Length: 419
Image (cartoon, rainbow, N blue to C red; front, side, top):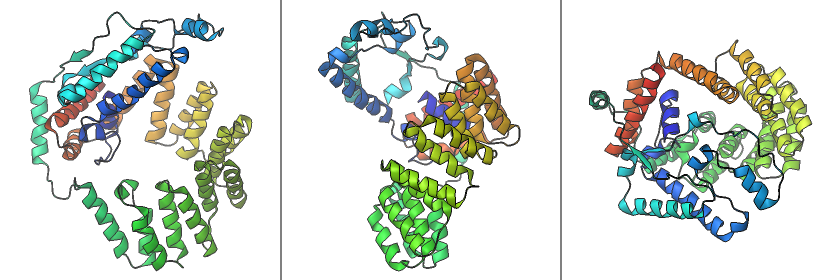
């Protein structure tokens, strides 16, 4: 929750109740249930497979538990036991806030404690002190009151409905009410995926196909929406239908390639990526996406060539710069990745590339990386209405304790920028 609240506080995204990060406050029990589900499975696996399992607590790892030595002993390996630990104590977080715990039922708390105790019983390495560190780090009451007053002043008219079903039903009504093909294409292209949450494809796809069966641009817009919805086979069918109706762009081949890749049909995927490149060798994103497939196929040398082609043809395109930097970083060429990101930012501004550069610098040198990250974030927020954003964001939260928790976390994140 610390990470998600920080991302929200520093990103100032327009939020809705379906956003991943916000869900931890829309559903205050979600984080606990996720932890419970994941760790129950770990306990089950460890009990069933003790001969291939090593369990270590986070505190034990940060205290220098000899994990490599244990791996060598248990599995007969000869790993270097003198290698420096990758764990940085300055990044260690193991405190839980009382506000979070207070929102959980007694039953859920009991389940969490039971699974935690089972994990401790299974642990090969554990700290002498594994008691939870519960904190109450309330801010000055005036700061909280100030935000709550701003929330009260917000004009609620026009804010997104909290009724997900109603809002999604509204999308369906809007979609099916459109009778003009160009307007429908535009509507489908502009539809965010979250607005279709809970709506079955069969509720709208057959109706559109029936009414606009001979309108290639509508079918193409349908195909792109299906791709975003991860309905890959249906998307392929619609892409191919649009082409048969005379609507063709080289990016259609690329998107078909992405669909086949998602379906695990790598040979078909490669065929369509190559087809897209052949149809338009000047589009840099075609090379970058082909390179991603080659990585999956463990053809790293070919992938690097395609990443370089994409980057050199798309120096101003974050969609080409970021994957290339990630590739270089994964090849232990972080210095080169940082240089590529810096070259981009010397000419253009882009928050995703700025975030990438911060991550790379943190990996290379934590101290210098933190300085860069906080400086960059502070500059970005200086011209923003952070308090107004926070008040608007709270409109999607129903629990007073969850709302208070998010407010306090965001205020603390902003305060840290000035410390």
